[in-house]
Image 1 (cartoon, helix red, strand yellow):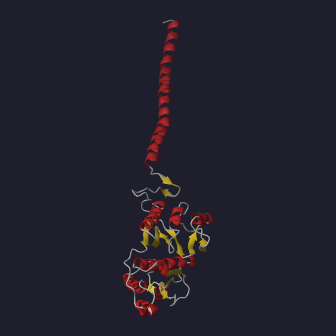
Image 2 (tube, rainbow, N blue to C red; image 1 turned 90 degrees about the horizontal axis):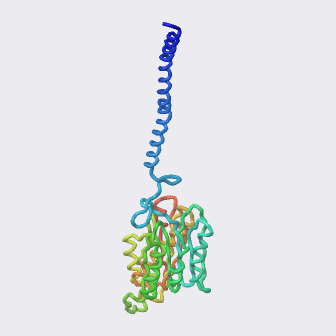
Image 3 (cartoon, one colour; image 1 turned 60 degrees about the vertical axis):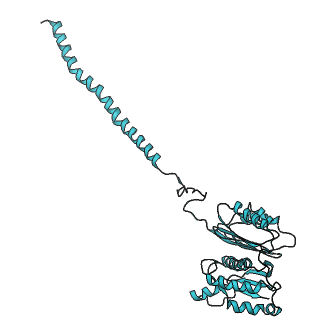
Length: 327
């Protein structure tokens, strides 16, 4: 074997040693790519699946869903108590609004229906912690009820109650329809009655009307009391008021002041509103049972003039009352 053969052998030997090194280099690159890229792909796919599975939420929790009625399901709106009560030329506004702009919406709605002879008694307070009824579209209600001398609108919880003595069935229907359309997402209760629909009473003996005050006092036996949860009449209270109506409705010259009171729980603004609503509930019941609205004067006096101590539950129960004073 010569020099050339020796060189070829050396070259062959050298190539055989390098071949494995070249093979290892070509396999290492794909593994490096797999180690780096595949975990990133898996992480991206997992994040996308997790993101799609999350429920929609607002800043502080899940977004409310709307039920078939259009109200948020599972939620009950709690509006600040409010009372708008007209007695002849006096219009009393009692309750709380969160700010001046909310109150201004009510005053604007009233402006087109309140004549120059109407005296507005403004007892509204500003309380930023309450939610109040929106009156921005309520002008038709007050325009169509402008001629009702005992019209009232009360608010509590998610319920609006309109009451008073309408001149015709058409007026009653219109006012109640206005309220239901304006606040379609709330409970609107129509307690308007039509003047003259009741059967005309027999003319009473003059002596009976001369002593109607004593007759009413004998029937009531004291104040009409209410529970702590609102202004609904008890069955016993309704029975007493039916008898009061029987005494008042034939005596059209007799007038009764319906004074509402509360205990001293809560703020006085709330107490005045509750007492007004209680008085209006009694007056509306009497009107439904034949007493003319013009015979009644409704007042909400809050927690003044307690007849028992407010330091006990029994005393507070006695102070949640309505007194009927006949003149």
